[in-house]
Length: 459
Ligand SMILES: [Zn+2]
Image (cartoon, rainbow, N blue to C red; front, side):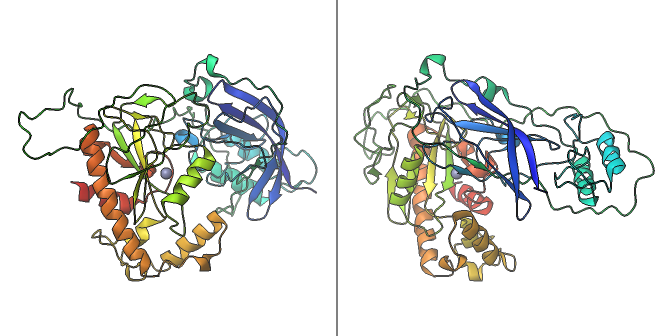
C-alpha cells in the first residue's frame, strides 16, 4: 500500500496574488515523518516573481509558507524564488496538524475524533479515519488527531497582502516564451508528526468542541519610532566635523547605481536590481536589521555577495572580520529598497557566519564555544549537527572550536557596532529601529543572545 497523501497546493505571487492552484498533488511518504511532492511548473508562473505557497493536504489543516522560515502568521510577503531548474523547497519548519477528516471543517474537533474511533482497526482505501493515508486506521491516526485537537489550530487563512499584492498590474512581466526547462519544486512538508500522546483508553464521551474562531494573522510588529528631525542642524561654525560627511546626492527612483559608498572606509559593490523590480526604488530608512550571512565556514563578504546575487536579492551591507561592503545604493536622504527582510524601510546588514550565540556568553563576552558557560551540555555539537544537515555539509567540517573564530567574531562585532552607529547617525535612526531578523519572522538569525548583546553595546 503506497503511503501517500493527496492535497491542494496554491502559489501566490507578488504580481497578481493567487497565481495557480494545483488541486490534486500527491505527497509521498519519506523516512522521518516527511512527505515529498514534485510539481512541474509552467509558464503561467513567471520566474521573475516572488512566491508564497499554501498547502492543504487531505485530512490535514492548511499551512502557509512565504519562505522556508517565514511561515504561518509570519507569512505576509512572498519570498520564494523559482529558477529554471529543479527547485527544492524544504518546508519542514512547520509540522502539519492532521485529523480533519471528511467533511473537513477547518479544525480538529470531536466529530473528527469520533470518526477515527469508529474506523479504528479498519483496513482499506479511502477510509475516513485514515489520516496518514497508509491504508489502515490505528492508534497513530488517533493520536495525530488528538495532538492536533489539543493544539486548537485551524486552517491558515490567506493574508490580504498575498491576495492583493502591492505591485500595480502594469508591472506584470510579459512571458514571451515558455521556459525551456521543466521546473520541479519538491515540497517536503512534515505531514506525520511523531505522536507524543498514546491513548490508553477510548474516551467514554465525545468532547464538546469549543467554537474556534479563525485567528487574524498577527502582523509583524513595527517598532515605534521617535520622529525623524526634518532638518539636520547645521553648525554655524565647522571647527571639527562631528557628523558623517554626506555625498551631496538625494535619492531619485531609477536604475542608476551609485558610484561611492557613504563611508570612505567601506567598499562598494552594488547588487543588481532585484527580481520583479523594474528599478531601484527610494525608501526612507527607519530600521536596521541584523542577519547572519548563513555561511557555516565564515567564508566572508565575497561569499555573502555571491549568494545574494545568485538569489537576486539586495541587502544593504556585508560585514566580515576584514571589511565592510556596501551592496546597495545609499544616498544622503534615502536608501534604495532591499528585499532582505519584511521591513520595507530597513537597511539590512549580513554579518559573515552563522550561529553567533555559540561565541557569546551571558556577559556578552566573545569566548570559545568550548568554554562558553552560556551553552548547555552538548549544545555545540547539536548546533553543528543541525547546521550540517541544513547546509548539506559534514559536521566534522565545522571546526568552530578553532581559536581563529574567536578573533573573527570579535573583529566582526567591532565593525558591526561601528557600522550601525554610523548608519543611525547618517539617517537619524533611533536604537528602537535596530533589530534582528529573528524579531521579524521565524528565522534564527542573527541569534537571540547576539542581538541582545549588540543592542546592549549600542546603548
Ligand atoms: Zn536573515
